[in-house]
Length: 239
Image (cartoon, rainbow, N blue to C red; front, side, top):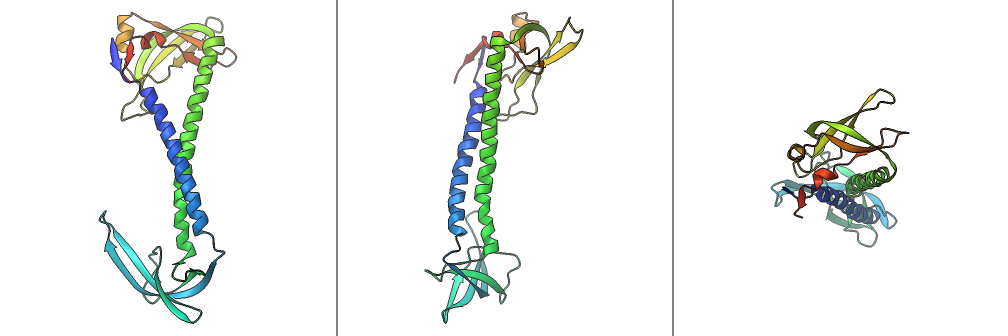
């Protein structure tokens, strides 16, 4: 008897986490960008960099502080920019904007583009998680349909190996390779099972299994599913 955790649940959870985190990052990023890129109440002017300083943050990285002097309605202001560029130097004149309601709130449009990172990263996670969920759902739907309406054949087990192109929690799943000799067209067809999160080798040997049922769409033989339930019967879910 084999005792394993169902890593398929972990796989599903990972896609959901990607999707939810991506959705949250995207929404927060869009809200930030709407506030940052709303230039309706902001006026452009020319400022002069008066000081560039630096300090080491809690992570040990150096953060740059840039102070700019500028004039608004005859009054001279000095304020800190919310960003830094390697092209900055003390005494350089740069194009800035200031908030009409709060002249001390200043910025540079080119630096504001950095805030696009938040919705950008969020959308990447959102797409990865969404695609993973959709692919997983479609695969399950196809397998269910084939198990109900597909043509059943028996294919010989020829190999058990790891799917090294896929990893969950640092482990590769197992796949079973089967071969079916089609007497009608005289061709040999190779099938690969879905990912198995346990080594089926011992169960195959103990039950003396040499073939597995395969359900095929004969109109498109690329659509198939190998029924490995006889092996999963030996697995106890501890999750």
